[in-house]
Amino acid sequence: MLVCDDDNTRYNALCGVNMIVKIGDINIGDGSPIAIQSMCNTKTVDIDGSIAQILKLEEHGCDIVRLSVPDVASSIAIAEIVKAVHIPVVADIHFDYKLAIASADAGVHKIRLNPGNIGSEQRVKYVADYLNERNIPIRIGVNGGSLEKQYKDMPIADAMCASAMGHINMLENANFFNTIVSVKSSNVRDNVDAYRKLRAVCDYPLHVGVTEAGVYEQGVIKSAIGIGSLLLDGIGDTIRVSLTDEPYKEVDTAKIILQSLGLGAPHVDVISCPTCARTDINVMSLANKVIELTKHIKKDVKIAVMGCVVNGPGEASHCDFGIAGGREKSVIFENGVVLKTVPNSELLDEIIKFIDRL
Ligand code: SF4
Image 1 (tube, helix red, strand yellow):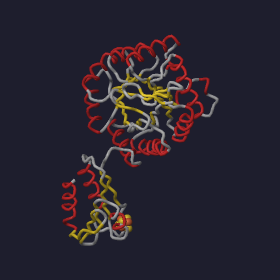
Image 2 (cartoon, rainbow, N blue to C red; image 1 turned 90 degrees about the vertical axis):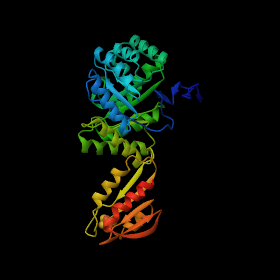
Image 3 (cartoon, rainbow, N blue to C red; image 1 turned 180 degrees about the horizontal axis):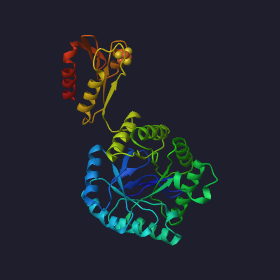
Image 4 (cartoon, rainbow, N blue to C red; image 1 turned 30 degrees about the vertical axis):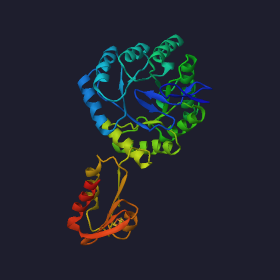
């Protein structure tokens, strides 16, 4: 049975599970828009540096940001950071429950913490009560690389799932149900298997990502496959792309993954062909120019930049605007029909005129 409380948080009343978890003013789960998360790679005690990085993440479309809180100084710093930024802040805690309490006092909007790692049932109960009183959710984050010993003989996906359920049970025994769960691995197959298994036995919203996915190109591909596979299954309520690179690139990549599956915010979709011996215009330069000129536009519009009239007209005919290049002149399409033919030297001007009308 599903019920709503005053702030529209939905509960599965039979088992106490929050179907929607609120992180600040962002709803996670139960069909809410999929939130994009990233994590600062600054020292949290570097308050100015952390704030600057978060503001850049905001510009790129980040919905929620996480910072490590490894010590008391970081928990003090995070209070200043929370006040200066505009998106919900998550404190990442390992082992020390007092840092979770200090971070809650600092005003963070979620705590990432595994209750099995903080020492005792009494501590779990203390943290659970403290966060329940303040309506601060917890994300349980199981990582395939640091599983508890008791799961070491199980297949990895089963082990991750069992570990997550163990942490969930600890929180539920402490009467805490305001939970989000992740089961990340750096191995894409294990990662996807673990989330599929977990979804079958767990109703809490899921935070999805491939952990330690690597440097830019490798990380983008592993994340696109891992996160994309799960999203296609309808699994995933918030996502993080993990890259050994600038955090804003995680956000850019996450946006493209969501957009590719029709799950992102309205945007301009630029289709371009890979070019071949038939190409007579500079497709790469034009397509990149269109992407640059349209990235601020928040409307669902499709633009095709095609190199010739073999496949070009067919693709362009499904678009709001399209060009199919020719030797000296190119064909312009609008709303699926041929509008006119223009000299190649005027192509960019025609594209800009269309974008201006958007
Ligand atoms: S659209 Fe034309 S130019 Fe582009 S790859 Fe296909 S055949 Fe080649």
